[in-house]
Length: 277
Image (cartoon, rainbow, N blue to C red; front, side, top):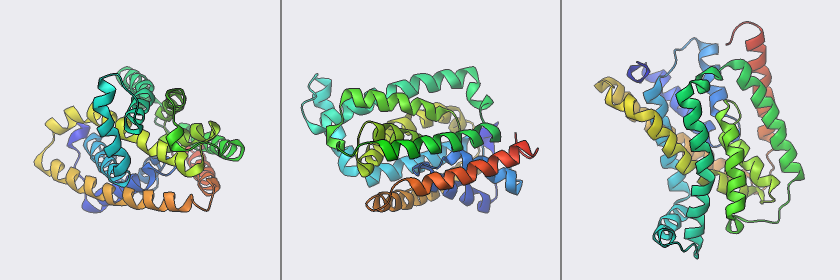
């Protein structure tokens, strides 16, 4: 089973580092992970490692935005009582609303097998290009009048619907939610902040969905590998988050768009040249 895959330490660290570095940048982690075995001949890392690196990135984003996460948890009791009258309660409500669409759509794709059918170099190459240019358009035409504190239930739902598109490999979850936020008029750093906060329940839900079977069927060696992968992805994701949030103070998303276009072209050349799926 895919959850039992064991691999060399070098490959384990490489996969975890790539996943961690690209999970929160708007460049698509799936595009990089499909390119890795295509270029190197390395085998697929397996479901358990996929879950582990997501646990690592979940830890990184939670730590980086701990003040927001703490406020959200603090507002949960008030929200349970039907009162979204504090910043924390409003944030939690927004995250719940934003997460529901992707959970429903993700479960549908997972249990019908459509998610695996879309995992190909051709699909990822085209989505890297198309949604890269969509991000560029949104970043250039979107306003700058809204801050994260202005997040409404309506805006959360709109961003949640944008997030559903990230279920198509190569779209980039962070990229498409930032796109949605910029179209709604959120300033760049706050668009990224909301996108990263939205990733917390989304990653947690997908990790639980994929991890139950993998964890209970894993060998001791595979479990050891999963701990290493989680730790490495945590470190690399924290570095990527720090870099992006600092850069957004002075630059736009254009460098990421250029990189997406380059990688998309590479994937399409590989796919249509007979080297990819």
